[in-house]
Image 1: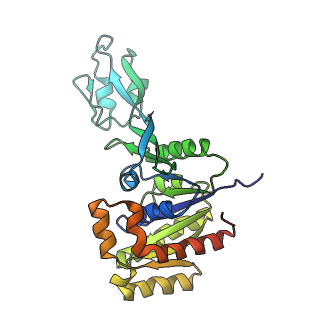
Image 2: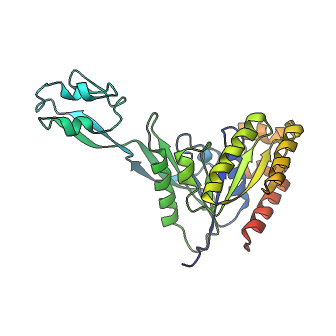
Image 3: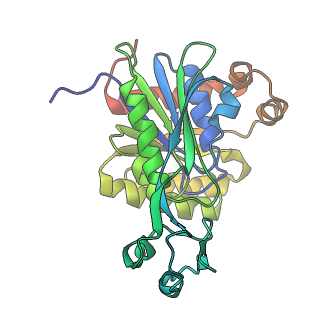
Length: 293
């Protein structure tokens, strides 16, 4: 099977707060001919940084919920006695407590339980000022199946890719859970963003273990490396020991932080960190062994 033209790069972190989304936004500003997907569906915020115009929205149904048809209900109480989530009381279902297991639906002797899909989130197609497509999603609070929603937005992005696209930049969710697994499906390369702290190193190793199972190429970026150069040394020594490429070290930049908070145009913000970011891009292209227009 012929390889696709574009390369899919996923930006990940073992924990939240490392600067993963910020790096994804910076890469999105510097790379040409790209499409962007925010797979952090529990807390999508890449669109806040990039400020796109929303074009389309789609409803997402990630689960089913039970509801009792009171007209047909014989009030036998069987459903309430069987529900292990205590979601049924006085012949009524609390949708916030219902986990969608369907036991009440299958057990009801009167066929009075309705079991149907419910909307648990939305996903969006949007466009940046330069015409770049950005796809993102919002899972409703407390809902599950975030991995399924990640798969849906990636499928939508792939379906709408045009011939001149060279990059799919994916802002992955933090951690190592189900939505992370969905976000790295079909990835060509992963950028692992960490911070020079003890917890940063610990969670970096966890995400590395996950990626090794998927056999995906990856490299490390240490963000704000100069706030704790001793711990940065621990990270680079570990990377050297296990033969992981360090793509770059990004210094802490107070002006970038202040500009980001103030909402200044994103492309104007990156001047202070442009050099290390361009180095990261150069090394990534080398590891992928591709040519870029």
